[in-house]
Image 1 (cartoon, helix red, strand yellow):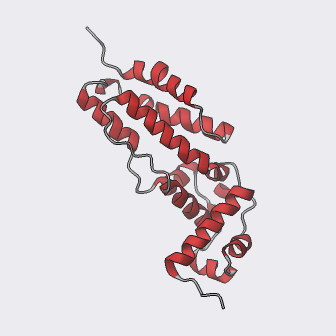
Image 2 (cartoon, helix red, strand yellow; image 1 turned 90 degrees about the vertical axis):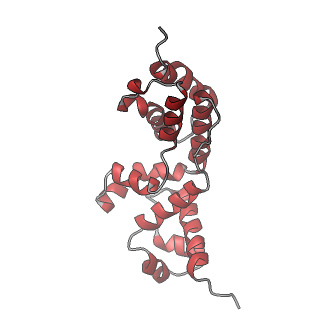
Image 3 (cartoon, helix red, strand yellow; image 1 turned 135 degrees about the vertical axis):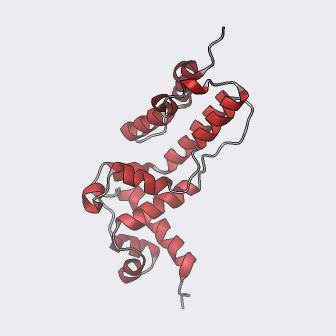
Length: 193
């Protein structure tokens, strides 16, 4: 006789199943019934945990993202740290293409939320790794804080997101290096007298 799963063990199985369904069918093809079957549980069990299919979808993606943290320790050089950040973000994107299907489907109409609401739900509680890197670089004198206008500060994230959303893939190493070396660093480096 199969042992009944409960609590965290059951929730992990359901989130794995939800992510599997997202990966296989996208958000548009996600059904609570399919998640229940894949998780080896029942639809009423899912209904007790989540009200809508959007809830386990967001939870499953957040869980997958947590498996690929983007925090970067102090490596003593802003360029090295930025490239490492983009590498880690690429690893996350490779395993989280399902996340991007949420942006292009009925999710927003179904939940009444905006893209900003979804982004906030997905990154809730995460440290802004780019801000940490930039703060260290300013402290080391590698970046002029006065040049960190909001649009400049978010440039690397914006380029990364656009590439990932438009291609459903992480940007290649060469492109990430070009963003850092030819676009971002020239904008923020201190002006030499």
